[in-house]
Every structure is written in structure tokens, then in C-alpha cells.
Length: 504
Image (tube, rainbow, N blue to C red; front, side, top):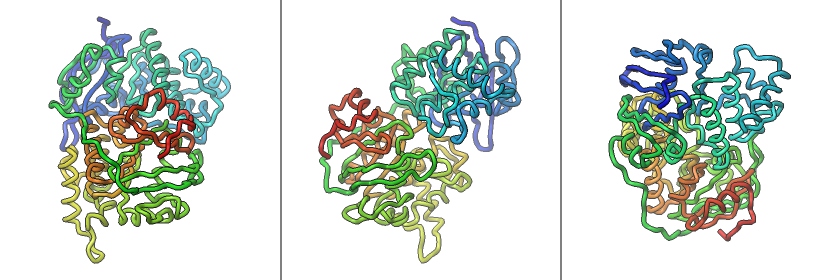
């Protein structure tokens, strides 16, 4: 057993109405890859922010490398050898790789010297990057490399990784794991947060499990089944999503030659997309981040309009219609970015329910907003989707990411759409919450709705989709039945092998 690099003793942190961390104690060994597990709202984010100096604990203590450790800000944490790669990238698209790295350093060298150092370190760790490339032109995997290189240039002793594989292809995940194993061999400790229990089991040597802000268990993931870890995280057993076989019904959503220029710099234009989605069907659309997922969602939801005949709903051309008009006809949508796009951060859940549910839930009468009905609608979403929150009056920004995701998806499903488009429906949510969302999507299809699930999680699509398409550089492959489709075939499709076609 390796000796401890970081030891936490009795760490506690409370916010109004919630105890985020409650007497947390555990250790991370030197050169150890240690998983931190817990459902959404379990306290993981508060804990790692405390370790990184973004949050000050109310009580408790930390010891790093035998010395007391209590960073008042991230600068102090970095000076002590603690680095963190956040789930959400903090990069400037218009700047180069080297310029972005320099912004994260206390005293960066000149750009030429820094570029040479980036090239050297990226090669030695198997993360090749051109320091002169503009970040806006990088894939999601390459952007993550920039974030990791920022940390590696600090020569960290402890590296915190928050959901590092959520936007990566299977091939990019393997590259990342090779890099992290190399760091472990060099003596670097890694604190690893992920909801993907399969990769936790394959990659981590120890795990600490949190529930409702407290440590409820530890295990060796290599010897523990994923379901056992998931059930310990949530404190109960839960069923995998299931549903009876469905026969597709009449066409509901039809895309005919859907093309559109990129709506912003570094975006992806849509190119001649053709597909029909039927009643009772779940169409899964996979792709690596940055291949047109956001643009396709916008074109389907009405945030981005196109030629009238490019998008049809039950025979009605809706390409020129905005989101409200499409909702009135039965097409609802939930974008990938929950905070600030799917939900207004400073508005309450009741107000956010009103934003998209006004028409289909009858929340407006003769021009007046029916706040009581909106509150009841928000409460129904909270109850049905087990959203952990004090109540419908809570601001959206006060929810954990996974709980806000459950609210956003539930808000659309409870409007009984005839067609639902969701982008990354279970991104960043725990196994139990993901099972709830996926089951709700299956149930919606069972009730006769056409469902389009755009996701980078291939396991998710293989679990719930009836047919599969790959989105690559704004082009959509022909749909293929999901049953019998292999990961190798899916990988080829994701890479742009559009000759793998079947009529759809």
C-alpha cells in the first residue's frame, strides 16, 4: 500500500439549506489513481473545489505531502503541486494553443520558448499538439489536451480530473488513459471523477464513495461490480431501462436536404442531411463533439431557421418556424448546454418551467401568466424525475448539474411532445439518474412519440436507440438498425465512412 500524498480529515462545508460535505475523511496514495464516486449532488464538486482552493471548508483539515494544507485560492494549490482539469473547458477559441496555455500560468515565458516546451511535453506524454493552432479549430479531444498540458507544465504531484472522458471517442479515451498511467508511473497521484463505472473499474485502483455529502464506503473498483458501486452511491437498487419491442408507425419528423452555414465562427455547417423519424421510434445520432450536434439541434428546435421544406413535422413544413411555433405543433427540444441555454440560471424552477411549457401546458390564459399552474408543473417534474431541490422556488443555478439535467429533460417530456429532440440527455449525470432519463425516453416512444437522441455516449445509444446514424463534419450517415451493429462499425461511421449505408 502506497503512503498517503493527500489526507483529508473531517472536512465539512454547509450552504443555506444543504450540507454539501459532512465529516469527509480519506487518503490518496502516492502514485495512486483514486476514484471519487457519488450521485449528482453527493458533494464531489464541493470537495474537489476545496482541495483546489476554490472553496474554504467550515471545519476539518488537510495534509499534503506531510505538511498542513489549506489553500486560500487555486494559485496556492498550484504552488503546492495540485492541478485540476475541469469538466467544462476554459479556453479562448480565437487564441492559439500556446496563448491559451500562457493565460493559465503565473509567470509564462515568451511564446517561442513556451511553444517549444509545449511541443516537447506533448510529445513525451503522447498528446501531440501544434502550439500555433487556433483553439477554435480543435476537436474536443484536442481541447482537452490543451487543458491537460496546462497542468503538466506545472509538474503536478496531484492531478484532479473531473469527467475527463465525457466528450472523447473510444480511441481518445485510450490515449488519455495511456497518458495518465504514464503520470502514475512517474509518481503523480490522480483523483478521478467519472460516472462511467466501467472505465472506473478498468482504470482506478481505489475508490471513495460519497452519498449526501458523507463517505459511505470505499472499495477496489477492479474487484467490485459496477452495479454494486452504483447501488452504494444511491443507497438503493435500480432497474436498467427496458421496454417492449416497438413497431415504427407513421412518419413524424422528416429532414430533406437539410443544409445550413455555421451560425458562428468555429461552428460546423450542416450538409445535405436526409432522414425520417417515425412514431414510436428512437433514432440515435452519435458523433464526436464539434461535428455539428449543436447546429443540428438548433435547426430542429427552431433556434436556427432553414428553408421551409428542409424540416417537416407530420407533413407540415416547419423550416421557417421558430421554437414556439414548433412547440405548438408538438416538437419539443432540450439542448446540450443546460445552464444558460436550457435553463436561465437566476430564474426559479417555476419560472424555467414557464419558459418552455407555457403553450403546451396551458400556463397562459388571456395574456396572463398562471403562476400557480406553472408551480404545479415544476413540482410534477421534480417529483417524477426525482430532482433533488428544496422546491420549485429554487434558482436553477443552485442545483447540481445532474439534477438540473433531470429537470430540463423532464420539463420537455411532461409536455407530451409528438417529437422530442434531446442533445446529450444524460451528460454528467450518475448511473441512477441516467437510468431514469433513459427509461423516460423509452416510455415516451412507447406512447407513440418520435424521439431523436443526439449523444456522444455510445453505450447510451446502444441501450435505447432503434436506429443509429453518425454525424461527421455536418454530414449524417444513412440510418442503420441498432440491433446487430458492432462498435467497430460504429467507429467507422463516426470517422466519416458514409458508404456504410442502408435505406432509411
